[in-house]
Length: 166
Image (cartoon, rainbow, N blue to C red; front, side, top):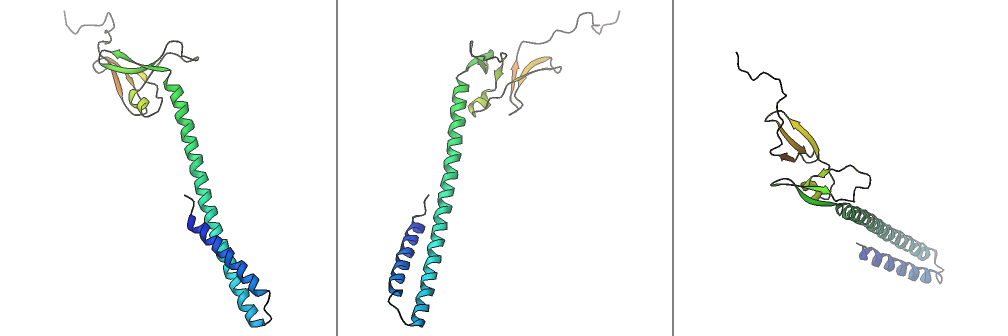
């Protein structure tokens, strides 16, 4: 926020400096002239100090405006990006965001994480096969969410011994 005290102090110092300068023009006493010169110097330094405070406050405001404009740009970009996706079931009870038909823009079909989507992030789920339980799942490497494809179990390779002896 603009430091109104700094601006008011600057204006008061400049006013005082002008008054001192006016008073100095009619002085003929060297000692009194020297005293007024010191007063004038002090007021000019005070005005400079207030001006620097105001410049620092303005600089901080400009930085904040830049940050907010950057944040708005990111939100607008994400808003356009998220319109390309729709919530779809991966399997019953497991929802993911999938690219809408016709919105591929040269990308391969993929799913994105629902948690990351809600956080304003696009995190493509990676399909992984886990031998434990032989389950297929989609994993978000950003937030570590896992989306299981229940019922998509791998069949054991054919011709493998069943474990029984003859």
